[in-house]
Structures are given as structure tokens and as C-alpha cells.
Image (tube, one colour):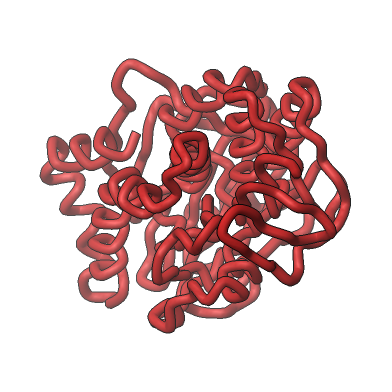
Length: 338
């Protein structure tokens, strides 16, 4: 019997397996897709996430990020991170670095998919394996969250979707730029010396080109630049009744997700993975939901507040001017998230 079976080999699952191996537990990751796995995301990692990667022994190349910049027409507001840099990095490069680190320290990664789960008082059986514990890290629309009966019916309201594309162009700033419009946001993240990622988040389901028409200044900068294909994700909001069921814990996006608006997905995935393993190594899985709530509280409160303001065109157009007029408040919000 192995110690920890991890369902899902994305950043959250691989981080959980690396942490488990670091405590002396035997970890096996089950993932159906070959590495590296790409995903539609903004690809900006907050400073806390960069520190978490280093603590795992993961070194990944990318572009240093000094802070966050909001733009709406001629109005702008920006805040630099305190003391540390964030990192803009291609999702595939991040995944490859975590994957290789896991293999290097003895984590077994097997192809497959976790379907049915059978739990008893001292073990879990799934994917033909028997383990003391199960960590479900199978993503935003987690089948295991549903299989464990942890899906919350409140996750479908106010649906938002994300689309991402890369452009061959030298980054013009060492900030993540957030361009605002009445109908959504465009996130520009430097991820290479001649590459930027542009992710669009909106409640409207349109083509990428239609979304970009709402950001004429940005669209003009990117006009005629070579671009790759578009990747999409959504609906983004997902809720779990709790993050614990018997001998199974939910981590990363599977544990519940508000929105990508504040760019903390990777940092929170790494933090919740570490917390889950701490609880399992102490044989106290029941402690994990409270730890998850504490780790994600600031993100959830700030993101919910911004989403409420962005929901209506009348208040959405006030977000950047308000940040511009009260820069101390904007800096405080960015520092709270970093």
C-alpha cells in the first residue's frame, strides 16, 4: 500500500507529490496526459508562488515581474511588489520543471485516470492502486470533486470564461498589465524575451478577436504580430462544500475557485498542496478545510469584491480611476496578495 495517491499531474498535484516525498511518504501521481501539459492561464506567478517553487527545489526560467499595472484608456495605476519579484513563465515550462523535480526525488508518475473511488477506515482504492490517502488535484471541473459528493450547487452563477494566446513581441514592461473594459479584462504577461501571453476574462462568450476589439490600444500594439492558437477555460467559478471527505483531500483548482482576476492560481495551488500534505503527514485530514480557508481568504475576499464591481458597466469603468486616485489602497491590495 502506497502512502499518497495523487489524482492529477498539474502543478498542484506535482507539488503535493513532491511535498509528500519530502516527508518520507511514497507518492504516486496518476495523470492521463503526457508532459508537459499546457493550459489556458495568465502565466504570471506571484512572489509567494515563486518562493514556494524554490522551496520545492524547482528552478524555472522566465521573466521577472515587478508588479501589477491597471489600465483603462489614458488612466492607469500600478503597484510594485515588496522585496521580491513575481515571475512570468510559460505554463509548459512550469509543468516540465515540476514534473522533472518529482521524478528526480522518486515520485512515480503513471499514465491513467482515476475513476471510481472506494474508501474504508484506513485506505483508499482507485485507479487499480491502494493508498493510505488520496489527493484530488484534477482541475477546475474536477470529476473527483463530484464523485466524492463535494460539488456545491452554488458554483454556476455569474459564469466567466478565459481565453489565452501568445504573441511574438518583445515585452514592453516588467509588470503584469491588466487592461479593463466594460465587458472584461485583458492580462498581458511577459513570459520570454520575445513573447507575451494575453489572456482575456469575460462573462461574455465571444471569439478572441471579438474580445480584443474591446481593448483598442492593446489590439493596435499587437496588430500583425505572429500569434499561436487560442486556448480556453471556464466557467471559472467552482465551489466545493468542503475540501475533505474521509481519506481524500481536494487541492488546487479542484478545491474551489473564484476567478483568475487577481492572478493567484499557481501560488494558491502550491500553498494548498503543502497544507494538504502537512495534514496527511499528521494523520489529521479534518484540519485541512480550515487551513485551506485561511490560506485562500484574502484572495477570495479581494476577488469577490472586484468581481462585484466589474459585473456592471457603470461600476467597472470606475475601478481603474479609483485605483489611480487612491494609490495607497491599490498598493495595499497588491501587497496583500503577493
